[in-house]
Length: 102
Image (cartoon, rainbow, N blue to C red):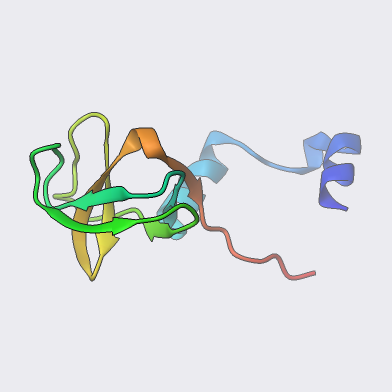
């Protein structure tokens, strides 16, 4: 229903930079794993210690910690309550907006 309404009345849906900034500040970003055997590492490096291995379909919350700045090509994720890292080449990032109430 929403998709059809959006195609008919796109100006009624405020998908603006301000709305995106609000969503990023108020909702979690998740990393959906796209490959089996993806290593979750302790550091943002191929030499980083392997903490665990995850499979396709697993979703991990992206870390919002100020010190979770990752090297290019790495995504900081929460695993076991601690910031860990996965390769950006094997995940899809999205905002976890939950279910709409109608």
